[in-house]
Length: 157
Image (cartoon, rainbow, N blue to C red; front, top):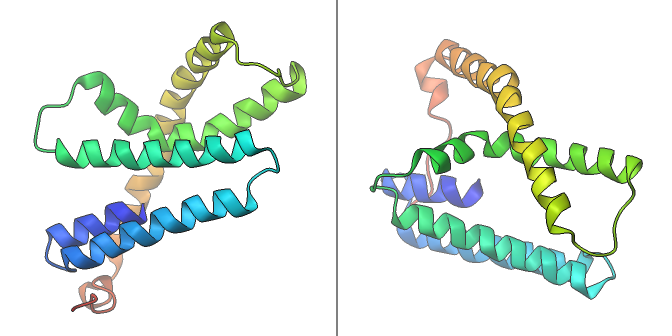
């Protein structure tokens, strides 16, 4: 979110590209450093968090580089429900852990089953919770006087 906001503001002239690049460096450093320093004592778990985060940054970079191109509908749909996925997947994992227990090794069939349950579950949560909340937020933002909406002056260099 922070990197996306920094890039958006740089594109719209509210900040410089240098500031967006600095934001990216600080964000990656903090995320990788905190995963390394405060992650589970298991080295595999730490590496997993770091690799997952770096893959997320790479995905962001690919999306940024290809944002002016046609995006397949499936990827657009996944992007639409991605916030719901981020909120629902820990709950689903907790349910699985409490009912089936945690397996020591990955099982491809169970991973496919996990996504087969998660993704359809996230569609109604997006439609019934996230989308109405976004509409409500936009409506509240429209009610704020224009001079208060702009917020503090953007950073400049």
